[in-house]
Image (cartoon, helix red, strand yellow):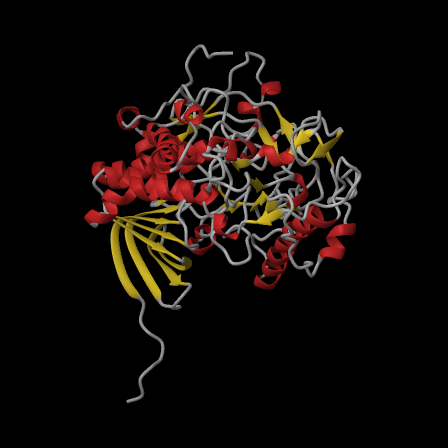
Length: 531
């Protein structure tokens, strides 16, 4: 009898399967494994960590992060990053003595660090559960199918990017922690993409007329670079350079590859500069992840910055719910934009001395772990979002909508967060939406789908809108969402309840919230906060 070349999928089983090993996925895995459950976590890139690692974005955080406003394990992660540099790197005595060490001294965050440092710390945090066999991590595995029986997911099949082999994972609960909400269509979950209409949500900043499901925030291929004066590290001219060199969006004040941008909250034109030293905003210092002044003389030949700037936001098309051909085209063009920005900086960018270009800018491929020097995965700001038991609207959190100066109180809170409603230019050629929001809570209802019983949202795919995604998508909030989802799945197994049933029972909900509090998850903001 002839043998088939098609191998049968390998079968694995766990209490909880986490599809996607991003920031929320890692937090969910940690919570579920600490709760005594067996866990399988898959990740389609080489690195777990998502925003923090494979997307190479230093944390975006709120002003009180050093004192409160995040979970205990997220604080352990932050402390772990600082300890990593203190233990292993030749810091100056001044840098070493700082309690709030910021390796990059970037202006965007109190903790700007290299993605490899985040990866090392995350791996250390998860190591005890990996070594004990409680947690299995399958990197370079992408979900390709799901088996669903009625309103329950029975299994999810993932493909190994290297070998092509399939693995079918059966579990009691499935958490979607993918960057784009990729498990939702595979499982037949009800979900939303893009911009809802005002008629649907009543949100002041929602679009008028029909909803726009393909109108979502632009994404970015980030990259790292340092600066070595006197050396020439000019890359080969990108294939699409001429297009991007000339590109100007109708709503943008100048060519995208220029020093002119806009202030997101006022939309007024602003002029940037590359380095500090003038009264203009320094792009290099904005997301600098290594400040060589923090280290012994000569240890780093140059400071390193992470380029996630207005000039390499890509908004010419979506990569969600489009054909494979269109998706690949947009991913390629986004890469070409980032490489074109670097080439423009090296060759044509106007300098304060009247010259052009900074050939000493060096693409640091090693920092992001790729051959082309671009992050392993694009920085995805907006995902598919579940149709949830509860959806957070602009009216719940926006400062202008809350006359009492407080965000909506959610009785089923599973955590807290704080960030402006920050929407980047969209694939519908719509401008920034950047408005003030208030410190908010994360309601349990936004993690629970309206129908499927054993699926939970574990990152920015929760029940938010196009508008409120803008403040619920940041690092500490995504971590909190994932951690709460991990505890929820574990708690439901322990109690023999569905997530919907737990939320609907006052005694069970309060018991679950006590569990979260005991695990170091803050459910409400302090009554008073430092100015």
